[in-house]
Length: 320
Image (cartoon, rainbow, N blue to C red):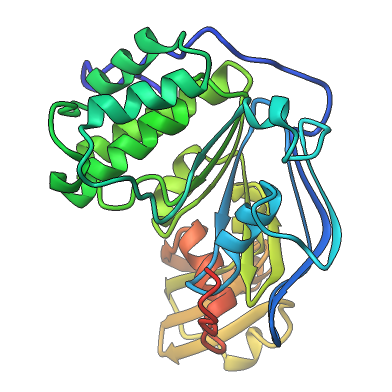
């Protein structure tokens, strides 16, 4: 993430392993809770040095996908691998940083004690990196975990996930509960890990932050993958709204001959329509009537995401 207004992105820790294999892999995974199918034939991959954003409404299956990928849940079918190994392999698990969506710790322990415990579990050599992260997030480690606000508890979780400079990051709503400044800092920290070769999978309800830092996006709906690609690729597939003002009124049937165009309104010289793909054909058809003004809507991730949910609401099965 670039510098902005003198605010420097936090430096990444030195440790990173760049490999030729897919760092995170789920292949045709199905997971159910009783009769409720949380994931259906779901596949996703994250390469080293890549950030993939996982989007979906509550109950879409995001948290289930992450927990299954990390070996915390068993799938009925399909395969999962982290760095080419089972996610339950101790050596592999040591290279993973995970932030769950419901991060919890013993409430009467001081944050400094909690972080030292995490450090000991990881070999006792990450005190300097932990201090750097604590300073970047302006986290008060003298307080007990149970006394912290939601945002500060989230900061503890972010430090715990990043303190050992993991090669793989799996982050479930990492900026949840944070103020805008802290949100930005967390994204910079994540971005820095990507820059040194780590693979990152993160979920979010904040579409703008996914659009800002994700290399690719996967959209889940009711346990099914409904879209996947770069934000540019997904945006190109979205319907774009165009409003035009012409010099002379066109006949309504001028739009009928244009493939992928849906006319929303035509009032004299003013027309509003939606276009799937290129607008070149409809612009050429309107040219004889004189185009005085054009207003176009953005091809952004919001339009793509809501396009998959507008027809019928996503069911909340409690699976996230």
